[in-house]
Structure formats: structure tokens, C-alpha cells
Image (cartoon, rainbow, N blue to C red; front, side):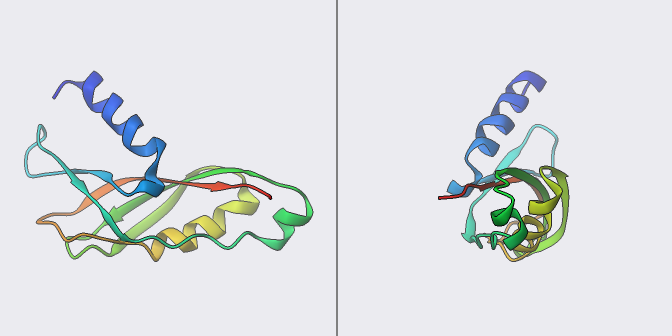
Length: 113
């Protein structure tokens, strides 16, 4: 798979991560495996963010273990007031098992209604 195709696929898959799949590296560089989320936890909207009318998207990079649990998660973008809630939620997600570790980005959208 070319670098351009891989980048386009990554953008497409991270545009709607609440739908489930995140890209994962297989055993070879050209192999692309898609793991589906089995359990998606929505973040709790921080009270301070509500009071300050803070909205936006927080990007969390996750490393998923072969058993489907989130092994590691880190904030890669978004408002600091919203980031901790998104990080806590991402750590609770569960994915389909796979032969190897995988990683990807989950976007959490915070909107006031």
C-alpha cells in the first residue's frame, strides 16, 4: 500500500471513529488490519467546560493489546479542559482480539446541546 493510500485510509478511518474501526499494523508493513470496537465509552462532559461553553474535538492515540484492551492512551490534540475526560473514556474502550498489538486515533467530539 502506498504512503498516500495509507494516509488517505487513516484519515477516512479516523474521521468517524465513533463508528468503530481503527487501523492496525499487521505482521508486515503492507498488511492493514481493521479492528472493530466492541465497547465504546462516551466521555463525561466536564462541568467546567459546560460552564465555560467549551466545545471541540479531542484526539486520543490508543495502543490496543492483542486481547482487545487499551494498553496505552495519550492525548494528541484538543482543548485541555476536555482532554482528561476523553482520555479516561478511551482507556475503557474494548476492541476485537487480534494476533498483534495495534494503534490508532479516536476522536471524541464535545458539543453542548
